[in-house]
Length: 186
Image (cartoon, rainbow, N blue to C red):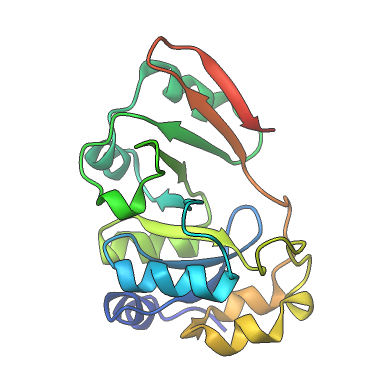
């Protein structure tokens, strides 16, 4: 069974939270423009609101709509062997509630085709975070996902049920204003 992209887009546009498969692991996602949906993800994960989430974009053009991309970031994205989220400090168009307390944001250009189509359909970045209660290990199979989480999401992508994560998380790299690179998570 394949995901009905239009249906998922409608659910997201109506403030829904979806359970997805990503290019790393299972994810909880919502629109970056919907603060209530982001708050719902914080509640589902029982996560403190001072910890921000990664955003996913589908294209280079969408990335450049929301942040100023330093030259070094292009090289990192091109050369990385695993999915990489880059922390940007020059935000062009994101609400403050979607940013870290220090005014930065971590964004990953997603390669998973279904998510690319969903993001393309909603025409904005989506929030992404692992499908686990804060402090617990991320599930390695769909069967390991906490039933409390499954009960609280608005939609589960059909492909997620058969998904086997290739990675437990993305690398996170911060590029400083001076071009200094800091690996936050390898």
